[in-house]
Length: 427
Length: 194
Image (cartoon, rainbow over all chains, first blue to last red; front, side, top):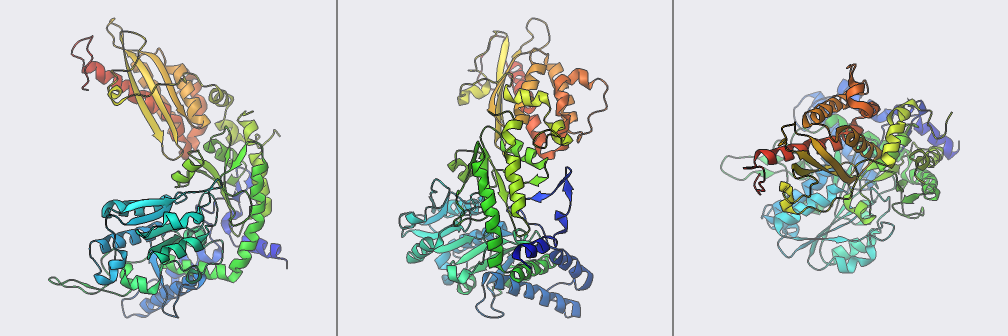
């Protein structure tokens, strides 16, 4: 079987794709917003409710035991996907309600550390006036805003990496943007609008040189490439299940074991405390439980683990090679008259997420016209207004692929975009 | 089959000729001077007629960045007649639906009485809430004129706000003009308070 035939079989595992929209076969090119789910994931979620639903890490009955095992197995699977275990049972993965929740957890914890919580061990996370937090202009609002707020709460200064003409983060300026006052660098691995893969090495090495913590937004990288957080040497990373073929409502926070152990909790309640008193401070659990207060969405987490397994079953190197063939086709958008790509115009160091502008036609109109042909793309600012301002636009159109897309689908999009300006009578 | 998926009924229903034409060459679109903060009260706005109270409203749709400033001049009824929208212009940018809707609104509302304009706004709102089905009023064609072409837009929840943006601006600016009238101590007044 050729690889293309294999991917055709993989596509057939996604029931949602087998339908017509406005009379045309659905072309789903909005996976950067949320990916579709394979049968294995859909089944895992409902099977959990059919067979083993029970609270985890509590209760002495058999279902509770099975549920706990399934829950922790999911953690191990997710950890394997991104190489985030010191050893078996030593996974450096915290479950959260989503990537946004992961980033807010971190920003809140750092804020708590800044107020002295977590004691001496947490002092490395503490911020005060004069300290600096560094982000980039390519950040999703879910990175920018939690850390902008953290700066406001602690009196720290927010600084940022600028972008080049193609929207790439200017990693070459790391030595000047990251000063000795820098405590935190929060940066995206892959731009959710530009599709550009960040050159992380100079940023990470400079950050560590000045003793800063590196927080990586891995939402747009984990679904599309082989990830090894240990090799990248980032300190924390956040991403979501639903963009990697898993359910919504689940996210992940990776943290180096030693850092997770030093990090004070951000959310308090059941399941995260060892000893609670009326008249003495509580004693909190070790990570990851310390950060998982309250009842977890267990069925969704178990299904997210199945998604991670499913991705590893295909092999992330193969996923990357397959999606590169789609990148090639999507980049031909740049050859359509009046179309400008907002991001790298070559297939080098980018993923198959391509934002573009059709001169003279508002993205809402482009999206509607494209939708009428059964093609789903995202229009708007994609929760990343600063990067749009960088390109001098408020909103754009964005096509983003996943393992189930084909080069033929990308060609259909390019052809459809070719008709936009005529339809809206732009000369 | 026409070009570029034009055979698709949904698309044709949404982007009717009236809409595409109006979006390309919208009526009432002008370049409005920047207002200073004082102008929020309507006091420093220019107006065409002595007996008119000018007011503006800025509307913004954060999901797509469409924005419009609607400028109205409402006659104060000092001639004994009803309060009337004597002038309606706007400045802004956005998708073809929002631009066309503004254009059609100008054609419908300018020189109408405030009561007539508000009634039309209410009818248009009902049309946009109809989820593509339209409003079973026999005379909606008469009252809303060209605005009935936006019925197709009402099928798309994400686009309804585009069509309503200008109407919201009209309602808010007229309300503001009326509140200035109410707060006037005399006909010739120019107070800064609202």
